[in-house]
Image (cartoon, rainbow over all chains, first blue to last red; front, top):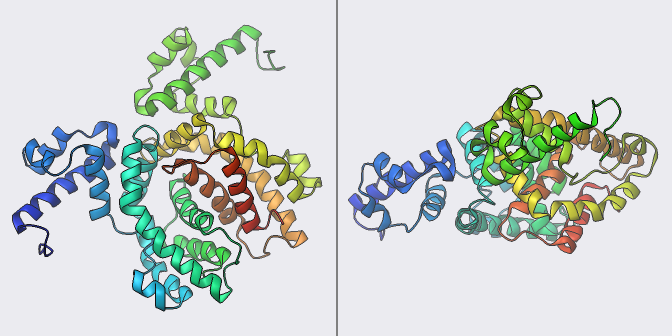
Length: 200
Length: 200
């Protein structure tokens, strides 16, 4: 692991990551109620001041951990690619990794914990939304706009609704009592994208 | 409150309901981890044996409480109506009550708790799915099949995927940081149903 430029000394970056990993693990295992700054410090092998220098509360810490460590379940494309390449080709190219990410047991557990904290810990959901979801929705919106221009997505479709139907279906599906395997999830994602008009 | 025929004596039925109400309240307030059979008994004003005579564990009790007490967020139609009346007319007629139910703070809190327990307490999700979700999906499937026969829903659409896209979008939307008001939810539901082909 090389420290990214401008992100401080390598030792600081290693401490960041140890804290974030401990925060994410404890959140998935115990939920936000069950994870405390003390436990995160202990599991990361650092003192509490090292944590509070970086994050003022566990909600911000957990949101930062999700942003930094969680593999994208659906990362269609970079901002640049979304402006220039074929929307359906980008979506097709993302299916395998999206299906693998969405069927990982850790992803399922994370989705349950994040949704589960939506009402009891709104600041965690707000931070997760701002840090993790919004940038991904911006890329998806751009892809959908271009697909509307091409005529494959209905011109009068509300794109926020369309994104909710896609993201909502996937997260709803993985939480059901019989979560799908990777192959079933590939088929499922294709059906969802076809219905919206992002795949032919 | 009159005891339904065949559901035991009125006093037993009143005890049932007191226990179910206490279970649902504690589940929404504290989550399944925070709700114990002891607390439910105390809040309902009954002894623990009265509870265990009826439900063997808190997961079954909470699932029964959801089944019995929670207003349908989307109850399109009765099984009979789904066989005979126009799918789009039934969906249109259900919009107002669906929007009111889905925007109630208690519904949002319930969805968060149910999803939040999906991985940590799979038996609760399984009981909720079997008791509450499956009967509603059967009606929705029948409506979609009839809309496919009429040609408004695509003939090759996987209906389980379509139902996930509708139910997933609504539950995903209400958990977002800026939950919609009733009027916005009416507009949102119409956009979802139009996308699937259940509304013109």
